[in-house]
Image 1 (cartoon, rainbow, N blue to C red):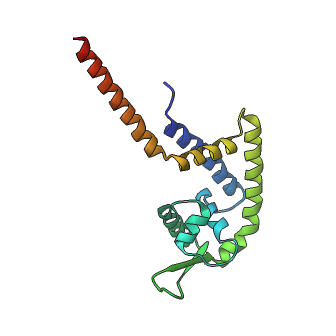
Image 2: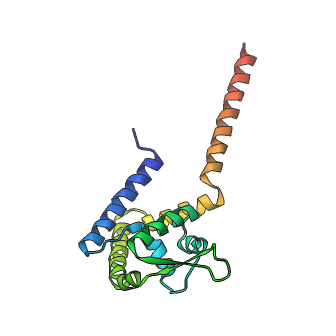
Image 3: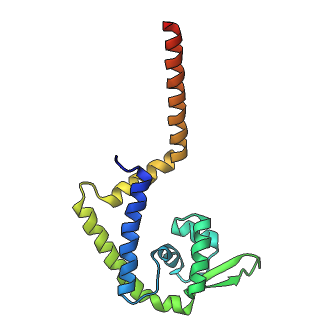
Length: 168
């Protein structure tokens, strides 16, 4: 039996993240792949709110909050109360995070080259396929597609039942 889409995607992420994580370890970095979108969002140097980081990184606010908490523990970022609203946290790279950037950028370049190599080995570039899938899901979310399929199944079942009653 062919694995479902979710199972395949989780396996793909495991393969990719596992290799990227191993590359960071080989480079002597105590760094997790999930930190990268947040690091990239903070590289410009301006402190940002968690919401701004989530938006810039293209991740959900809960995912940003979890990742930021891990990065704070690792000492890669700093958090200060907002100037206008003390309840708001302003996040920036710590000195340790800044110092890590040159090594990270080398790793990111190698990862990008590996991604291009993977794309070249496939009949359709994975990066383009993923971009098309994301765009399609932004037009019609997967939840809406599930509901439509469920409704089509329900209508189809009702039609079959009505047809069976007419034939009796």
